Length: 211
Image 1 (cartoon, rainbow, N blue to C red):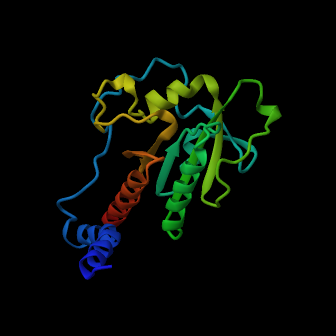
Image 2 (image 1 turned 135 degrees about the vertical axis):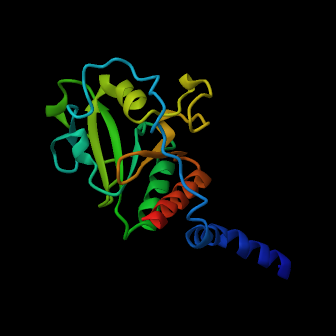
Image 3 (image 1 turned 60 degrees about the vertical axis):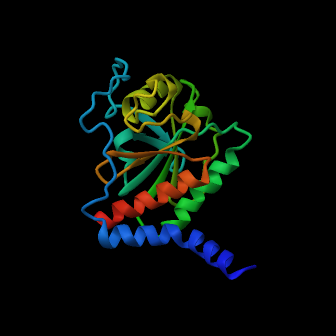
């Protein structure tokens, strides 16, 4: 292999690290992540009687019931609603495990939400989505999915017709949502795309540099 090709390869592999160090050292006042829905009205939130404070979930890790706000136990939370029946689901698991391995010493949790039919709670046979220590699986009533997707986490789905503040459209099953230490939405990512997960990792590092 020619020397020039070796240099190009080394630069390509080290670019994320170089960018992170640059942002940490020089870009603190110039680069920041948006805070989604800090000012915008959540236009696609339907009129539900339930509030996010009252929603009760089943914590599969602890085998008990918890309130939604009780699951936010770390500085950074990666929220997603995976389709466990997807034939390519292992791709998503691999990418999420890569995130956890990258931040093994940082307060980051993966929160996997999966539906359960009303009245089936006493017949739990569901497996944890990820078996990692910093990953948690929660079951939610199936009829509340629209409330979660459109009212709480505001997924950038096709219904926005290109008007979502993130300026992108990602299938619900593939979307990762990043929450910061104040539970504000800081980014949306395609968990099936390595480059998107790389962006998630980089942006968590940017948030860490602000602390």
